[in-house]
Amino acid sequence: MDELDAAILRELQSDARKTNRDVAAAVGISPTTALERTRALRARGVIRGARLDLDLAAIGRGVQALVAVRIRPPSRDVIESFRDWAAALPQTLGVFVTSGSEDFILHVAVGSNDDLYAFVIDELTLRREVADVRTSIVYEHLQNRSVLPVGR
Amino acid sequence: MDELDAAILRELQSDARKTNRDVAAAVGISPTTALERTRALRARGVIRGARLDLDLAAIGRGVQALVAVRIRPPSRDVIESFRDWAAALPQTLGVFVTSGSEDFILHVAVGSNDDLYAFVIDELTLRREVADVRTSIVYEHLQNRSVLPVGR
DNA sequence: CGTGAAAATTTGCGGAT
DNA sequence: ATCCGCAAATTTTCACG
Image 1 (cartoon, helix red, strand yellow):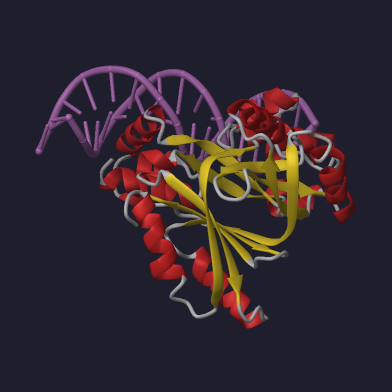
Image 2 (cartoon, helix red, strand yellow; image 1 turned 180 degrees about the vertical axis):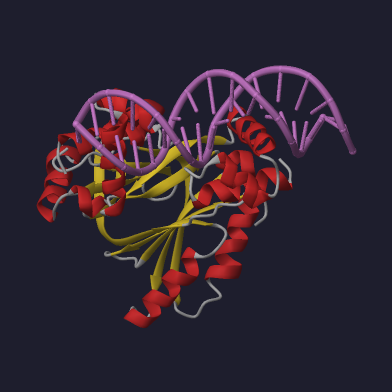
């Protein structure tokens, strides 16, 4: 994990579909070396894959929310089964398993406020382990394009 | 936005670096048509780009947290300037601008608990508009690989 | 880590349904 | 209007130094 690897990650984070040739040119090495490094990063698990960045509003999922959920009892079995259930829901973008006063924060995207309401009261609260739910609408979700290694 | 577009998005979400040829084969159309559709989706803004999925622990950022922040006063100027500042921090993965009892939820990744503590007390609370901070450690963050259009 | 050649993919154009 | 086949241009990929 040297300076060269970091530079390759920086390039691919700006656009994960950048061609190997472009990455090599930007970093200042040959395409072959860039390819070898990138493959090694993938083999070592540093690069897990590439995700599409979609306009959620354009696909009819323009309403986002964070739903804090408290689970009772918070035993391993109950936590893990709720986690897997929540992560597989079509409304779910992501699931944070957290410490603090809540056990989960669900990041969901739905089509409308009605869909959100239905999600919370028809799906979530029907589960017996759900002791408490607190919903916050997400007005905006910004994501950082560059997540660099080590200390900044 | 028909069934074909949805199928293409489904394929590219499973791996945003999939070749156009593979996408076409999986969807059952010619590479030419697949390319044309994919470009149209990009031109219409449905596809915004592709992001790398990194193993944060492998780049020395293995400690994640959600930091709920309350801002005073919550006027547009103050909100927007805090938002832009927070989104640009190297520790920040994402910024949620929310309704509810907090104004922001910051998703951050740092190297250690010490770094997290330093982030919160040395960076966040130094800003005068930050009225309240509540930090939750993220034990695990699952993300959904398939975000499908419309009503599931 | 680079060079050069071979294989695979992307991509634009003309034509078919 | 949408989709496909073909061939050129670009890119990936590998054996070798």
